[in-house]
Amino acid sequence: MKRLTTLCLMLVLAIVLAACGNDDESSSDQASSADQEEAQKQMDEMQKKMEDQQVDADKTVATVNGTEIKGEEYNNLLSTAQQQAQASGSDPTTDDAAKEMKDQVLKSLVGNELLFQEAEKQNYEASDKEVDEQLKSAKDQFENEDKFKEALKAAGTTEEEYKERLKEGILVNKYVDGELSPKEVTEDDVKKYYEEMEKQAKESKQEGNLQKYEDIKDQLKAAMEQQNLQTVMLERVDELEKDADVKYNI
Image (cartoon, rainbow, N blue to C red; front, side, top):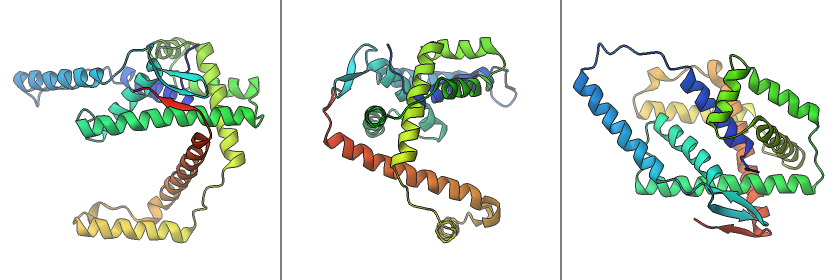
């Protein structure tokens, strides 16, 4: 069975959904035919470079305590990371960016597997009801059942495989909630963070674009809490990897 991490699949589905929702033709009044052709040429070249970074779908890119992580899973997450980089204005095909992205994708896949295995070892469980609730939540993001199945097909998986990944994700989340204690974010922490944002905005003469503290403090706190959680998760992954049999093959 293909092992596709819940995070990876959710991101792939989100991209497919966004693509399906943006099929409308945009106005070409502001661009000449030559400009459009050049832009399309550059997009095609970029796509070719990104595809060249992928590996054979059946290749074992890493093993975690005997469990194989395949190229198909790696390629899916790599593609997601590449698109995120493009959306932020970065070029994911430079030598440095490609190497960093490969390392991050492998680390994410191995880390997810380590956490999942540890969750099972600690006897965490996911009920059918919990899985079905998350499946319904995912389906609700789509116009209808057919659109959801189209997205699954485009992501290279089936509903049964997706449910299995949801179950794994629930186990990992329960383990993280039960075993990890990220640093609490206080109001003082958020204010200090905002003050640093103000300082940087002034230095770049962009203070006029900075939103007021009261308007974004909740979002800042949520982002900082997420960052703290990611920190302790990475620390736990590093601890687990020290005692695990992990092999990287690419």
